[in-house]
Image (cartoon, rainbow, N blue to C red; front, top):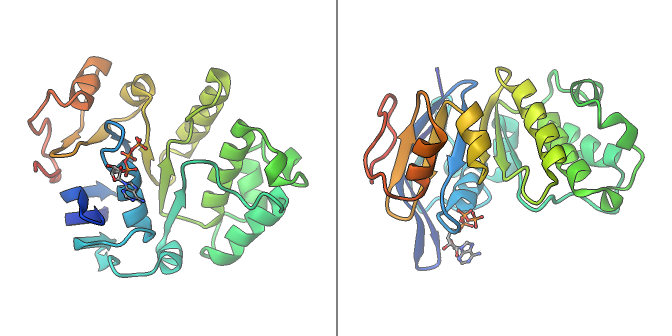
Length: 243
Ligand code: ATP
């Protein structure tokens, strides 16, 4: 079953066309890495899917329903949660309060505060802490917990391990592997080693081409896509725009 479908999606920043007609489909519970050079448009794309950046043209569908003009808060209710780059939390509030806000504004379902804490054991000891005083790794875990508390079908993660120590990065990666199979994930990453080891589907966003690859990905193969040397569609199983 197709969860997310992008058809000829265009995203702009003023006169700059950051996303130039991207077409792709993501299956239910599919886990996808989004890679590409700095400034290629990865963050813009996630924000467009979440409804935080306007869709200039094209269409976005979630389980077949058009959502391209839907406001961000309605997309959260429809099943999309974004964990943004930069570890943004309400710094003055406690971790519990940050998570409660997400529970109240997301969908009603299985991911109660208790279940989120059970799934992410590192969260419970932090519940009373003020979010502003957490370390980078702690904030990242709380961000993922907050996104889960919205009860998403599709979790969008923008560079969840950027600027974390390698051991903390591994914790976050382990957490993401645990979530695998339970919901769809689109994750922006510059960590090609991790991407090539754990992701079967990789979408490379470049300024003038979007490459969609599935199957066994070696690090070298991913690096070639990333380096913009590969200009062909490696695997066109379910669309993947070659633009
Ligand atoms: P990075 O890997 O560095 O985070 P990215 O792939 O996420 O990059 P975006 O942040 O989506 O890329 O940016 C895509 C393009 O849009 C870049 O050329 C960037 O300079 C431009 N851009 C992003 N945000 C804005 C903005 N607020 N105003 C104008 N241009 C912007």
